[in-house]
Length: 103
Image (cartoon, rainbow, N blue to C red):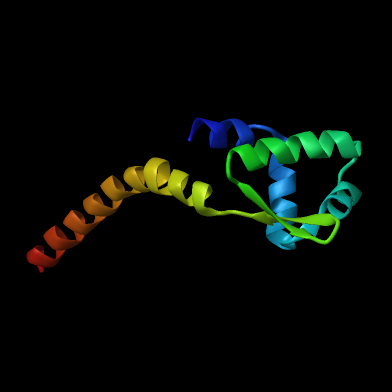
């Protein structure tokens, strides 16, 4: 999970993920067209995203298509967001029960 947080900490990598979310299966050329940086820099950012398992690739002939893998982000949501929401939801549920008993 540390690799995922490190990968998400960079705004350029988040922009790449947003681009893949909007249109999955992009080639390096397509991704570079949306970024204001060199092909080599985009490649380095994609490598970090791949190490974190946030991006997967499929080879199509001589090119690779890049796909967003939402599983690690979902795991973060479950672990870090979900556990904080559970307490609030339980409190709201308890409040609802108490209010219903008062009627």
